[in-house]
Image 1 (cartoon, rainbow over the protein chains, first blue to last red):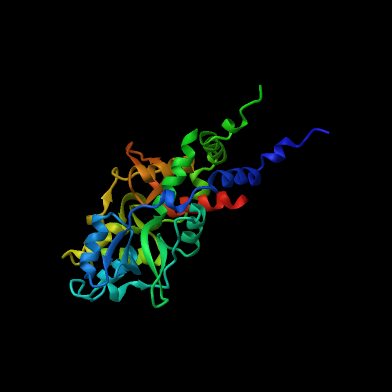
Image 2: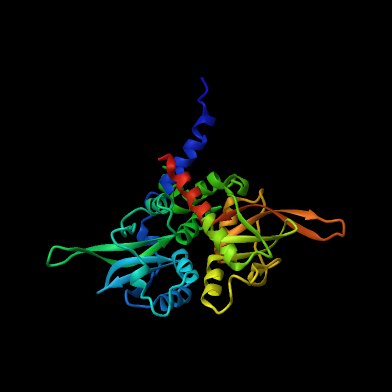
Length: 161
Length: 161
C-alpha cells in the first residue's frame, strides 16, 4: 500500500518540526538589556528611565539584587491617581519579589514565551541566583525577555524563506 | 558518495521549514478584539477603556472609521504632563491616519510581526478599505494584531513537541 505521505505533513507534524528548530534556542541568545533603578528612585524618575530605555517594564534593585518590577500599566495607574509622583519612591508601588516571574540564561526561549503568556506579563527578568553568607537566596538581574524579544525571534526564524 | 545529510539540516534549512509551517497563517487567524473609542472621548475615559480591555493600544474612530491610535506609552506621557485628562479629548493627542501602520485579514501573520518590529509599535489595527461616494478612502477596523498575538502564536506553534 502507498504510504500516507500527506498525513506525515499534517499540522501536528510541522509543529514538531518547528519545535525541533526552536528547542535549542536559549534565553541567553535573545535577552536584552533591562532598564533598572533603585528602590529609592521617585516614580517620576523611574518613568523617565522607562522612556529613555524605551522599555515596557522597569526592574528595581536594592544592594544590587532584584527586589521588584513596575510595568507601563502600573505606572499609568499611579500617574492617573492622586499620588505625588515626584515624591513617592518606586519601591512603594512596585510588585515585590517573590511575586515576579523570572527565567535564567539556560531556560528555553520557548519556555520564556510560555511564561509570558501564562502569567500575562510583558517582560521577564533574566536572573542568576546568589546564596548569601546568611543562607538567604537573592537574584542578580542579567537581562530581560519581553514580547518584543519573542516577536523579533519569530521574525528572524521565518527569514529563511 | 554519501549525501551530506548534516548540511540539509543546517540552520538555514530549518528556518525554511519554519517558514513553510507559518507561511499559510493569516492575520485573520490570530487577530483579536480591538479596544475602540470615539474622538470626543476624554483622555481619562480612553485610559479607563484601555484598562477594561487590558489593551496596550486604543484605536480611535470617527463615523465608524479608523482615524487614530494611542498607546499606553502615549497615555503615560500625557498623564505625566500638565493637561487636564478629564477635559482633553483623545482626538487631540492621538496619532492620526495615515500615520498608522495597518494590516488586512489576508496579510500573513509573519508580515504583521515584521511590521511590528520594523515600525517599533506594539499593535496594528486590522482594517478593511471602504471607498466612499466622494471617492475618499476610509478604513473599517475589524481587529488588532499585537506582540501578544504573535507571542501566543509562537507558543502554539511549538506545542507539537
